[in-house]
Image (cartoon, rainbow, N blue to C red; front, top):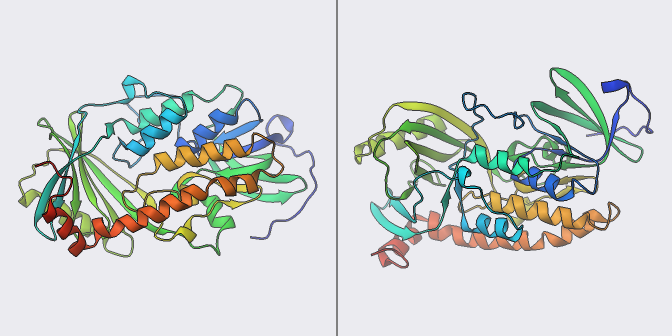
Length: 372
């Protein structure tokens, strides 16, 4: 993208002038919200998100395609941040085991795991509620693009059907696997393989006593899941875009029905893109002035697709890099995220034990770490 350099100047927009910020954050998920929470009292911040996170309406809920399990790594990061998840964010049942079903090898095992079962929308709203009032929040708003200007950037976004502009010294992309900012600045950088997660909610009056992970090479080289949540059962799968993913999802449902799983009335279907960084080089934090955090940077587990811990960690690192001011922040941030790169490398080493059918068979047959 060619960024036209123009000097700062007054532009007719909202209230007659272009608003000036130190930092504009695009995306108010865990990464963007946590960053705004940590630096909102130190800098003038604008936070933009396409969802209506400012007003809660139980009849018009915002559904993100997410299984809603808070993994131990994410729990650890929440503790490190000095936070505690509110009780009303959690949902029943709270379970402590995962049933692994390997349809390729016709094997099953039960493993002890410690996930919090939660309402993902309430989790995101809770994170947003912690942001200082000094942060300008623009929900139901869509980031459109930016141009380079003297001293920073001018961004464009749509809010209430009107295009508005703002000037800022830094733009932070916290806008997930569909990050528009990454597409603009990282065209020549290796992008992680993109999958589509499809998830359906079914009525269920007899919840299972465990979460279920399903492995089947006929369906996906990643995994599928069954999660009981209150009076519902969630069936989801992370599917390759290059495959006929809708048909693959239907095959999954038919196979599980043949195994005896009874899916009640379907309440809704949701979907979202997710990244799967299979190379450390696919982790990309942007550049000085336009910086990426969370899944927009490719910070998501290639083995489990867990992303909240990475969202919180990368946003914490960026906040810490800004403690000494904007000058030099990017070099400090790049140095801090080296441990995220190392973690992604280790997670990729773990993948064959989960996704290579032969290795997975050997692990499951051995019964190592399973519940007898």
